[in-house]
Length: 294
Image 1 (cartoon, one colour):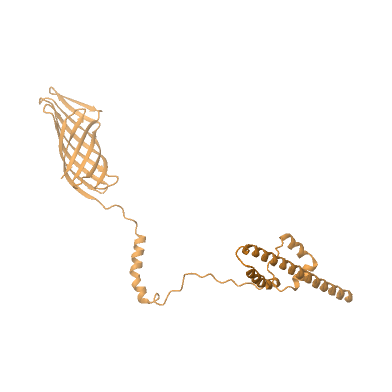
Image 2 (spheres, rainbow, N blue to C red; image 1 turned 120 degrees about the vertical axis):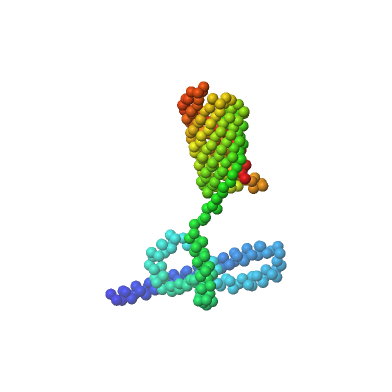
């Protein structure tokens, strides 16, 4: 039994040597053919420019290349799998020396260890104020627009209350703190035979406070007295008022505003021929005015 084993091993080794020799011969032939093809191609490329002497020098230089493998034929994955399954290929792969793994070099990074100066306690102490100020700026919330605290007196002129086209004149005082404000005014409208005297107190709200230009709206209470040509005819009105306007500054930094004031509804107490009457007026009384701050 051991004789058969020895004979089998001897035959397998002999077959492996034959396969190795055959592979080396085939590789040498392939290398020679590829080298000759490369030389021919190089000759054709430089034939128009190079002389015969230069071609001979290239041939002499190319001769040692024939001894070395230049091109290795690439085999498909299917051929590699078929060769691995055969017995000779298994024996050949067993005796082949394994390739040494190539050690990969670590990537170079720009980061470096801190220098000795950066770790100096004096340097660290000097950087503490910068760190605290930076942390305070990051932690602090962004501040809104600057707070506004503005008050001024004004003179206004306009027309109304519509539908009575009466020229009106008035004075008032206005106070604003950020988004909120108050307005007190006294106004007189007259065309000699009809005169109206009114006073009101209004609350203003400024959605985007800005003294350069800002809109406002609000509401409040107002009262007025309307007198006719004769003293025995008069009407007193009292009710809520609503206002919508825009306040701004001119190029000379003077305060101006224009607004629309609506009084609706009104409780009217009027006398006619010494008889008093009470009535609710559901018609909106509107006054348009333009103001000058001082």
